[in-house]
Image 1 (tube, rainbow, N blue to C red):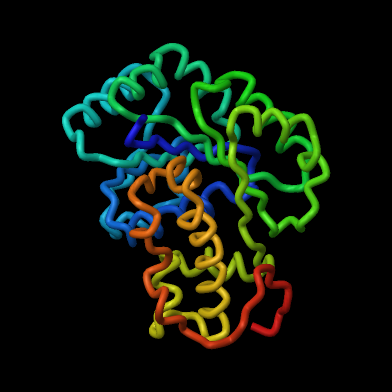
Image 2 (cartoon, rainbow, N blue to C red; image 1 turned 45 degrees about the horizontal axis):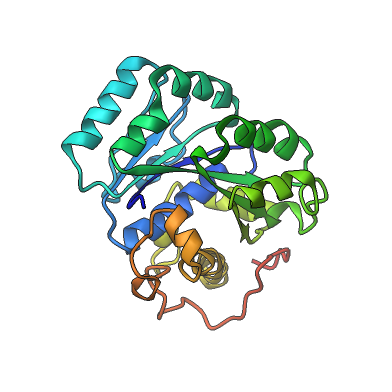
Length: 268
């Protein structure tokens, strides 16, 4: 059994890949995991975590990039999790890259199992053009975590009950839910350019209600991982689930307000 994980975000544009990556980084930080973070493409959407004990580097699709990555992992065997944020348009390049350098095989040799973290929306191309392409190419070589992003609603008619969902289940894939936030609230979080845990502190630029919304949103997603042994394994939290913690202030919510999973009110 592999004890280490190489987690790659994948999927269509603007479905929540970087959001899911940031939420995972918060969980890794809290659990004090030894993590390396990379991004593909031209834009580092995880830059706000550069000061949070993470060194975030660009990872290209050349043999030189592969050699440097594998050498680093071999030199630092205590690295437990690799997280790389990949834009949707890079999937085709990644497939050629992986085939050219036998990336998955080499990662397996070093003790890493690959997990694709794949958020989906209500759009058909999320599953037909991206998810299907992904699992048809990589098959059982890797594990899959599909995130139903409730920002787009709770109906995923192109996935729920489909052959895509059945195929993922045959591959022992896992499904998680990411609660939705109001569109303007997402933009508010982006505009702060701060890690999520800093946004729930009393000195953050958010008010009490806003901090409570962020706290509950993070808590719900993190708990869905740490309370699920398979999710914890697939996403690199392989220690005993009883030892895992979710958010950094799990016993100190910034508000006693009862905030539902999907926030549609504009009262904030």
